[in-house]
Image (cartoon, rainbow, N blue to C red; front, side, top):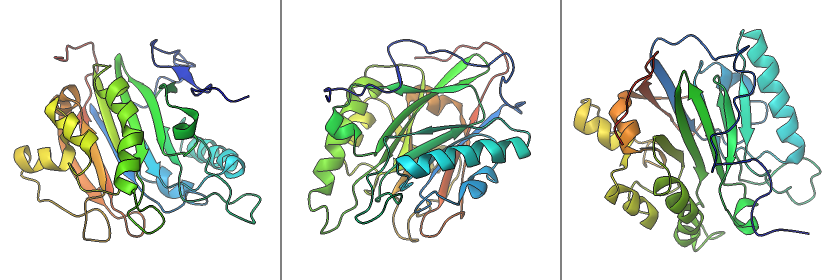
Length: 280
C-alpha cells in the first residue's frame, strides 16, 4: 500500500547518524572541498570516471540507473574507492523506471551523489508521485564539524515528450524551496542539470530573493571568472546554487570535460579544520 510521503531514508528533521566516523572520518583536508555536478548521460560503466575526478562530493544527474543497475553501480563505487584507498559513500534517488522491453536498463532519469566524507541521505516530504520520478536527492555530509547539505536535481528536458517541462520542473522544486531553501539553515547547495537557464524557473527566482546565488554568476562577480556554457557549448543547464552561508565559503570555480555534451561544474569551498562560526 503506497503512502503519501517517501518511506525511505532518514528524516531531515534530525541531525542524522554519523555511521563509522571514528574509523573513517573522511580524507585529509587541505581546507578546500571540491563539490561538483555533471550529467554523464548514463552512469553505468562510468563509475571509474567519477572516481578519477578525485575526493569530494559529486552529484551525477540522468544516471539511468534502475533498481538492478543501482546495486551494481554502488558495488563499483565502493570497490573502486577501496583500490584508491578511499571510502566512497554512494547515495541514490528513486531508481529510474525500466525501459520498455528491458529487465535492467533504466529510463532517462536518476540522481546519484558520492561522498568521501561521513554522509547520509535525508528525507523531505515529497509525494510518492514526485519521488518516484527519480529526479531528486538530498544528502548531508560532515566535513570535520561542519555539516554540508546537498540537494541534487534533474529537471525535465524541453522537448515534445515533455511539453510542460518548465511547469513540471517547478512543481518538483517546490518541496526543495519550502523545506530546504526556506526551512533549513547552514551550508546548503542545490546542484543539478536543471534543463533551464539560471533564473528561468520560478523556484530559482524565489531562491535569489532569499539570498541564494548561482555559482557561475557569483564567480563572474567575485573571482574574475569568465562565463562558460555547460551544455553542448551553448547553454548553462548544469548549475550549482549556493545558500548565503555556502557563498561565504566559495573560493574557486572550474569547469572540466569529463563526459560528452555536459561540463562538470565544480566549486571549491573553504572548509575549516576546527570549529568555526558561519553567519546565518
